Image 1 (tube, one colour):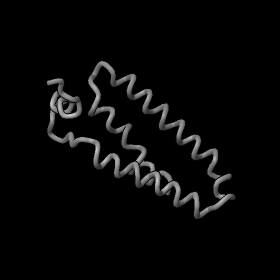
Image 2: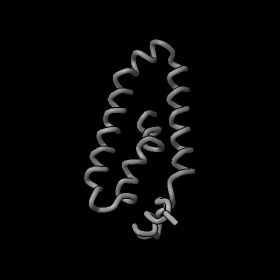
Image 3: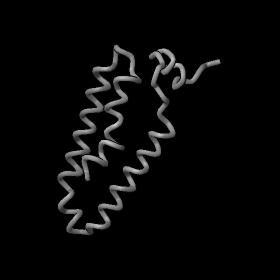
Image 4: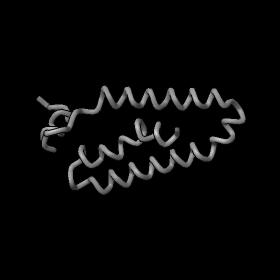
Length: 98
């Protein structure tokens, strides 16, 4: 359940690194994304038993709320990249200085 929820919400930034960042910072961006993903995964894994002892229903609904909020954020804020070049994607997310 955790891995499925993670893949649908919090795991998406790792996928987006390859599409949204230019080639000169993909390595750094990927490293930061992997570090943050592994760190947050460790926090969830470490505190899971403590939180289930506190309230098993509460932790489920709390984690579900965070995943839902992350999914909505990604669905509304992340641009569609299918069939677009990197330059087109960057132009759509970079504010123009007209």
